[in-house]
Amino acid sequence: MRQPGAEARDRSGVPAPRGAGEQPDPVGRERPRLPPGQYVQATMPVLHYGPVPACNPRTWDLRVYGATDSGRDHRWSWDEFMALPKTEIIADFHCVTKFSVLGITWLGVPTAEVLRSVPPSAAATHVMVWADFGYGANLPLDGLAEERTMLVTHRDGRELTPEQGYPVRLVVPSRYGWKNVKWVRAIEYMAGDRRGFWEERGYHNNADPWQEQRYSYQEVPGEGP
Ligand SMILES: Nc1nc2c(c(=O)[nH]1)N[C@H]1C(S)=C(S)[C@@H](COP(=O)(O)O)O[C@H]1N2
Ligand SMILES: [Mo]
View 1 (tube, rainbow, N blue to C red):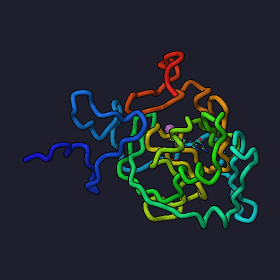
View 2 (tube, rainbow, N blue to C red):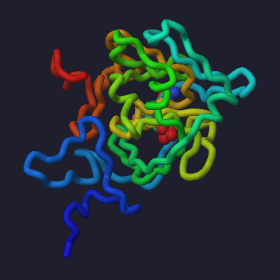
View 3 (spheres, rainbow, N blue to C red):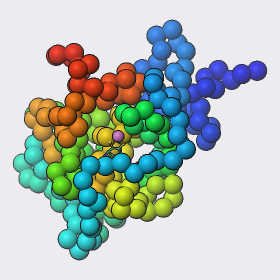
View 4 (cartoon, rainbow, N blue to C red):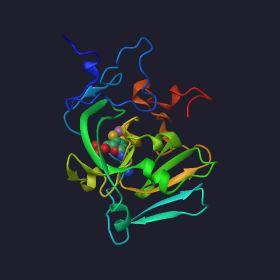
């Protein structure tokens, strides 16, 4: 007999994750493994805009700035950041160009931990996650607080390669791929929303694959986080 909800389980036997926007079907069915309009691909192509930044552990840091509760910025050096407790997740990756890669294992620091270490002020509603060279993606604060949003250092048991975002990359399974910022250097707490690199160039501000939020023309004024 078919297990109820079997189609929502991945090969690890773990139920498919539910994140922001991943609501149970109104008639109580499990949602399918793949978001609408996506197809499965075996491996991830390297995709990014601009050059791969060089990384010097001696000068590398990760900053949190903007609307912090203390009014001060926070800075982790390489040694400090790498010493933070890490956890592992298995997540599917959905690119807005319609390929999905299933069951990627990521190891990293949950961003909920960043929010605990550096509490945002009451005015903060959104964040911009910044990479080298001015690439950034915005998220509502809730997106950063999600249990499965992480700053990762390892993929499938190996340290990230430079092309994959070494040394630190954002993984946000509840959103399309472009919000998974490689080469993260800073998190800006924002009092109000601002669009990131692709969000300014025609892509959807919220980017939930389960609602197929691909393009900015789909946005409903006054709706969403
Ligand atoms: N810094 C940075 N991060 C980025 C991008 C980028 O251009 N710059 N591209 C995004 C896009 S569109 C995708 S699909 C994924 C691709 O990740 P991969 O190269 O590890 O497959 O990275 C995302 N992160
Ligand atoms: Mo992408």
